[in-house]
Image (cartoon, rainbow, N blue to C red; front, top):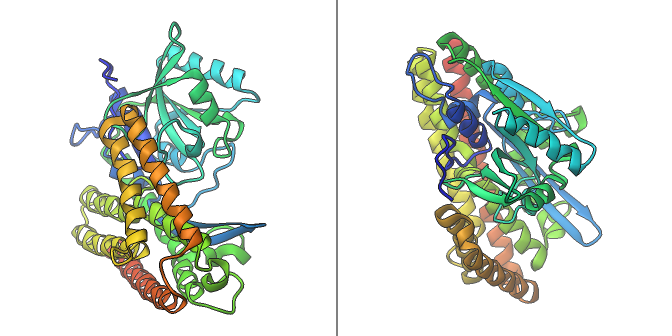
Length: 404
């Protein structure tokens, strides 16, 4: 739906919703007189991250890969709030004990002219959401007569959601206590503020890559060590969480492969968000007058390349059923990016076809036991390539900052 207001979409990462809010509010860089870029906002928040763990409950198993900096996302927001705090952008935290109260607060903020970053469960959106536990959309207008909201979420123009659709998405697991951030805005951001925010973001990313996240007994699941852990488990036949036992050939392995592909390629940007982070490093280097830092962007792009090679190996062209799953998943999301909610029928058809592929994999996995072993060994090799590329990038950024 086309509108005449200044808020625009088309940004892919989680920071894209905040980008839309600040651009619509006229927040600019005082040096360039341009809106703050999505890449800069992403990096200021800490940028990329790493994480790996699996979960089991009865017959259900799942795989989680962190591709951006991991933050404590409780009723007090983490990642987006940190970006705003570092840039001096005014925000007001919203939470509510009921859907009715949450909607009243949302409408009051919109009536006052403040766009709102509303946290949603992406699985409950009425269109394809990103493969994440939670997600934020920008809500900027309410039509009381129609009972609909105007929302920015990765599509190039605003989307229209009914009050019921938005409320349903806000009641999922990814939206505790109907959390939201009302964006108040600020005056143009001065160069020295951008420089300090970039430094803080770079430092936060480096620290988590090296130190991990969370309590001591869980830290090896995050940061650079998580890739070594994943590589070891993917071929380990003895560990109960090793892939040969935890994700045996059949539906469990198919779902793990598809989930890993989705999390690498579809969580707000391709190649585990490394291409976006490379753009941030380049921009941060320019802001800080650090040509060495600018040069390290090439290593972030090299990491992006091996991440993409890993995702391609998860659903390879050489295995027709897995290749079909990848094509259907790509089509499903591409339809949304190209046509938004107007592609609802075609998106549903692609999803139905994907479920048929999933059922086939459950009945007859397309690899023999021996072929599965070779397949997992190849995945291990590629995960270790990613681990080396990540280490190279971290060391180069650290050295450039120390020298700069």
